[in-house]
Image (cartoon, rainbow, N blue to C red; front, side):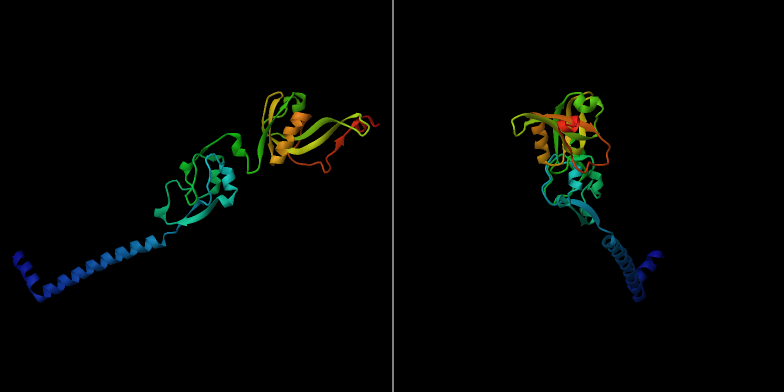
Length: 235
């Protein structure tokens, strides 16, 4: 009986119409599902990731990269175009170092960076780490440690106009940052803000005597003094 009814459904005009309507309904449902899926993919917000604008060489500190906007730029990508581990926040680079060269146009990813506790991660472009050898008194008797702020004084002897030796002490730099230090004298690593400062420290270490003076992290001396015999003896 069911076979007869099915046969009539396919052979009668009414049955053909019903089948057409059913096929149209199924097609409409499929179209609605497709359109919703497409709309969701189009409306999904793009993701901004960091992209290298210049060659970032292996060993470049992450802090240097994040504070140098010319090295990278936030760029929008569709979700499917974002690489695994892509970096979206420059703060993520703090305390990191590039473990391989990153080419221009390449997305910055977590795999490109590793942790580096070396001194180079504390240096910005132009800064230098300078090691100066000091005795215990010159290094404030071991009271200076990593993170201290110091003033750098230089003691030297020069000849006056009449040929007599004239010892002087003068303030060379204020508020320099100690990157590393021995427990009681020895080598002290100072952060030089410019290559010129680095050269001046090296010259002073070779041709005069350097003394470090422990200081607070704030405050300056408005006019760096030069101390001579008259400043001490009053004559």
